[in-house]
Structures are given as C-alpha cells and as structure tokens.
Length: 76
Image 1 (cartoon, one colour):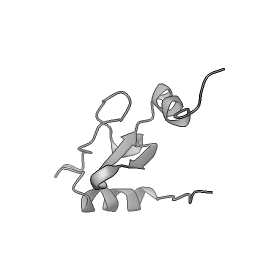
Image 2 (tube, rainbow, N blue to C red):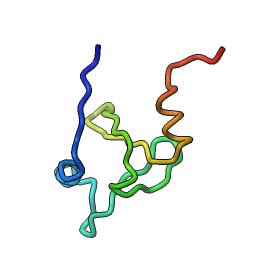
Image 3 (cartoon, rainbow, N blue to C red):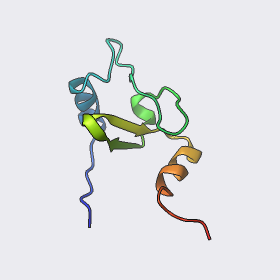
C-alpha cells in the first residue's frame, strides 16, 4: 500500500515557494497536467511528483480530477 501524504494550505504555499513555483505575487507558475490551464493555489487538487524532481498538478476541473483518478484503469 502506498503512503498518503496530506498538506495544509499554509504548508502548500511554503512548499511551492521553496520549489520556486510561485512568483512574487504568489501566483502559481505551473499548469494543470490535463487541461494545461494556469492554476491558483486554491485550485490545486492533487500534486504529482515526477521524474527529475518535477511537480505536476491537477486542477479543480471535474474532468481533470476524473482523468487523474482513472489513470491506469481500463474501460470495460
């Protein structure tokens, strides 16, 4: 079973600043993995660690959330 990691909003901002993913106006400098839309901190639903220490995010769009939750599943 995989570990589940949770992060509070205040910790998320600190994490994004540490990773240099926020600009001087605290705007997120990353786009949703699925719809390629720029996201705000409040719109981040999931963060996905990638290769080479790259972080990907999933926005709050229900279509993107569904895509993320169904990754790897086959349709009947």
